[in-house]
Length: 260
Image (cartoon, rainbow, N blue to C red; front, side, top):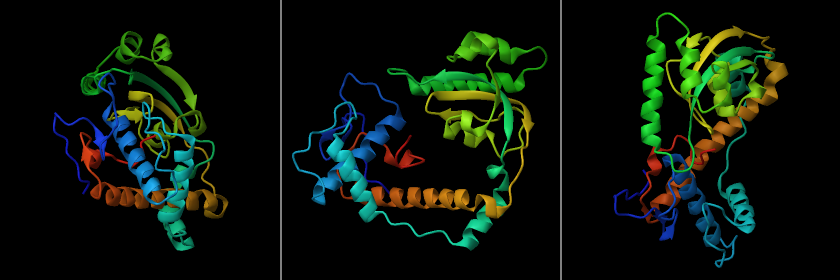
């Protein structure tokens, strides 16, 4: 477990390096990202990969030297095994739809944008209430009306319509929720992306073509490498956090160590 002190009086910091100034209002994910980056920056100094005089981050921005040092640190300390062909075949068999070529979905959404200063908890409550409302709607095109009045996306003027999308048209975290699935209708969960929280309705799907394993082996292997790296990085950050004084940030809640 991460060693954290999340008391209300603690200013968010890692080993007394402040993560956010009093005038900044950060969402939980952005605060965790800053904390993880600072753990790695300080570890780079400890490993003599970065000068001890490297300036502390300003509004979460680190120096170019720190970014380079962190890359070197991770290359040195976060080792992941190469996935075996057997593991790749198992993964492909269980997730073949994910590698479909030409898959498209017709989608509309209501976006609750995460912007500087927004109360993320209040925003999530509004988004969840909207999701429940639209899942329970019976008759009429309530989705289009709600998108027009509520969505923070310009598509709201068209009832939230995004049209037909392929995976390459979306942010990766958005695409993961839409593609390789079978769901039609309003999704029973909020979709999180770098832009905010989305209530999503899938109007139609085109399945595309599922290539043979041999044709997508490289993509399958890369997916497993990324998963293994994320797991190893999370464990490495747990080790660093256990050796640090972590105040005012809940690192245990992070789904991934460095939120994109």
